[in-house]
Amino acid sequence: MARLCLPDGAVRGVDIQGAQLGTTTSYTAGRDGTVTVNNPQHERALRELGAFSANLGGRPRGGWHCPDCGFAAFIRKCSRCGGTCERES
Image (cartoon, rainbow, N blue to C red; front, side, top):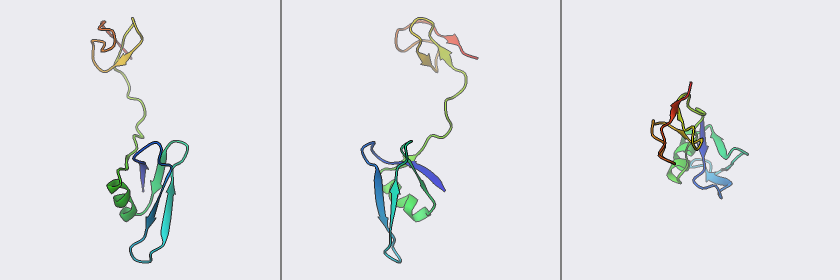
């Protein structure tokens, strides 16, 4: 089972026609913009159309935070204002 994001935010659904029986399976994106695919052949077809794996990991922990502009970064120097960031816990 795979969770995929469709290739463009404007694409709300994709129809895949089966190779053996010719039946059509519709994949409609949910509110979060992802579709759940159980068939490996359908997953392969969606990836060929430009679908990609959804980031289900959430927000990474730690990192750096700029006290001047409030920008969150992964490096010590702020890429927005150039200030020195503080370590987040």
